[in-house]
Image 1 (cartoon, rainbow, N blue to C red):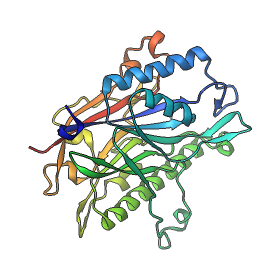
Image 2 (image 1 turned 180 degrees about the horizontal axis):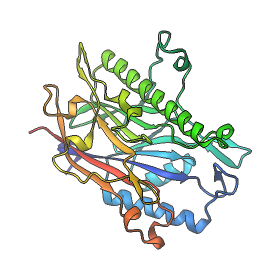
Image 3 (image 1 turned 90 degrees about the vertical axis):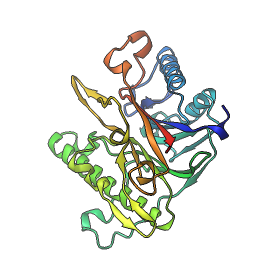
Image 4 (image 1 turned 135 degrees about the vertical axis):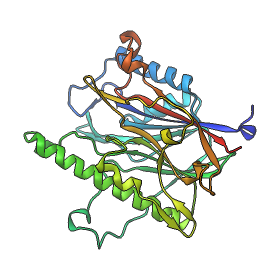
Length: 310
């Protein structure tokens, strides 16, 4: 079926987990894949994408951008955008990953608006994202122009100066993550007021959707252009297996999400599409085959299907 006649689209988000091509390292000077490990990792990614068949693929924890562009091109993606350039220290160790969106449709990179934070609490007035989100507009034949954000909110990883104080490090990370959630919602709300577009936010939020830390993303407001809100795609799907997307030992948590604006909820008058399927791809986490999955990812992929409202 041609793209012009399609009635649905698949969207997938995945944290790649240390996507740094050898001989370069990430985070630590000796955290380097061997050539065999790297080949196993990239083969797993290609096989996963082939199975999920996404039209839009949001990827986090990207260090080696050129290697990833080569890989997504081999997977059939003709268009891509990256949030920034990763930070490389001493020409050897990556320290700050970026986000990438691969698309089967043309896209246009946009900038998130600058916020007026003059009336915010002083501690928040100079807050910045630990990893700048990626904002693009994509023209989909079924839906028209949509706004897509790929984000990777602050993790619990301690900054160097707080590694000796784990409790303080956790608090600092949570505070940063909450401020990032607040800024992201405010920026998207501001964009929606200026130009109402169906909005999709995909990525690793490093927290549970129900947590108090992410509560700023739950805000709902009426604008002159309609209702603006973000909802978890799992809550909009007719059926779907909600399962952990990351495990710390035996403790599993949902950290990765696809959030959708009211245009993807048929209960709202401005709805233009609906979530017809929701899938967690986690076999490599819950039933791993080390020969295949040993260097895959420590996150599950979240994949959804959007269909025209009938």
